[in-house]
Amino acid sequence: MKISNLTEESTIYTSNVFFVTGTWNAMEDANTLVDVGMDQSIVHKINEYSTGVGKTRVEQVVLTHSHSDHIGILHLIREAFNPRIYAFSPYIGGVDHLLKDGDQLKMGDRIFEVYHTPGHSDDSICLFCQSEGALFTGDTSVVIQSTDGSYNQDFVRVMEQLCKKDIRAIYFGHGDPIINDCNALLSNSMKNIRKTQATGIIKNMKEDFS
View 1 (tube, rainbow, N blue to C red):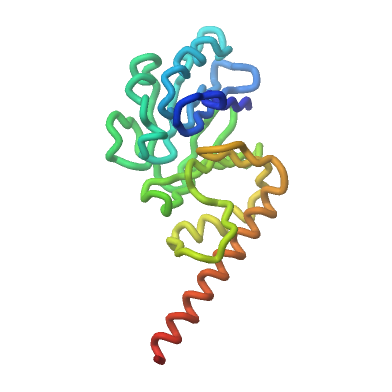
View 2: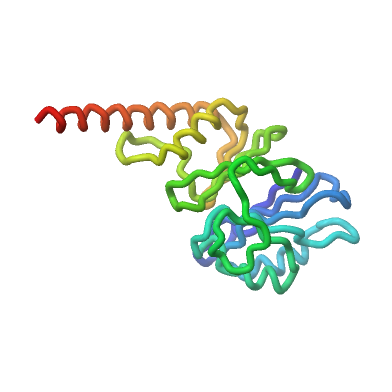
């Protein structure tokens, strides 16, 4: 599997756009964009990219959520490459397939599992490849360094599941990926979530008896 960030050098505000292709560009590989961002120059970059002889350059798009910086040029990508569009939200125009928690998708030459992670938005998802240890998070906050805030129980459940995985690379919707100590970071995030929950329980008990 090959992963390239097409917006790494963008000069406008946009989410990261990851292009996932197979190692050998085999016919059965699924050339996939994770999000499409807002930078129109990625269309040219895709046309210049080695995507395999006789293959559709972009066979599918997987949207991590519906915020505009992640879906801004979806119409241009559809016009240029006519890919299948996958998303959790039914309210994004032009979606071909609605995703559910636990669904599996082939991206490049690997299988990814869909994790619904409500929090940043109701339709946020993460995508995890067991064989590569690769996790795409969109804007889901999986690196949590504070004990403030509140967390949806579905999100907490997914975080508990991810902490049990062998995660070797985390690709975020913004910023650089993390390729070291991923499991330690997630475990620390889970500790902070539990501290936050415990603080909330104690606070509620005090309010009940006040």
